Image (tube, rainbow, N blue to C red; front, side, top):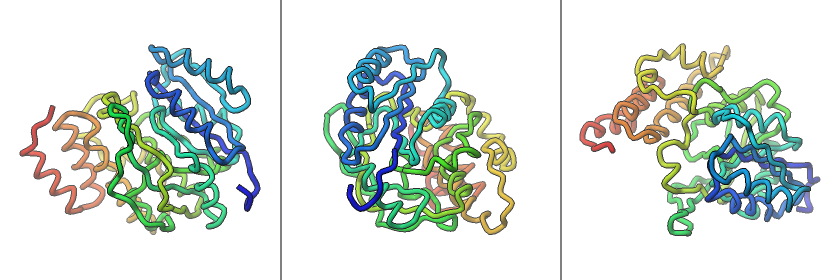
Length: 304
């Protein structure tokens, strides 16, 4: 990159039992065209060979890779917050332990933030099928657009492609007592930064697909009872998500965003009660035809 200064950018990777994927993911981060990076990996007390693999990589790349092996399991949200506290970059990219970075990911996202004076950038993504070792094209691509609180609805936006500024992380964290913490975190970030984001049309990331992540990708370890979703009130949801909004003009976009988040995670547990509970929560924030249709069709669907 020659048009911009090159501040340190942190690539953050929380991982749990990632022995099958983590080396390939870290190598994809090391191959970035943007060179001033650090890769911070927090191994959440894995019970496979993840720690051995990570220690070997860190020994080979001590100037780029820093590894933390947690002595106890923190859970998804706490592990993410730990990495935030232990990175040094001005900008941050988050990556799961099974998502591959394309070589120009950091360069494109940082360049888009600078060119558009934004506090957040994100992109399109494709899939990587680990079982068949091939890229699968994502047919739901988005055109480039500016993101503000008025239009931030998570449609076409993936948190695994986002870059943010570290300066706003002093006052926000992942909600440790509730699932969906990644999507809610970025909503809180946009509120805190009072800024705008940019969605670029490029593909920068390959979302990993494999048997181990189909039903647990978005869920925090701290919440397991499906009944909690069925009885929780809207006020309680906002409280537990640590979203305190005192600006009336944000009510509509906030409701739209949370509605879309709940609908998007309906398949993260193989349970009809959970599936319908997520759709009901989606509808409690915003009445929309898609959630109503999915809810009706669920009565004809066979769940595993």
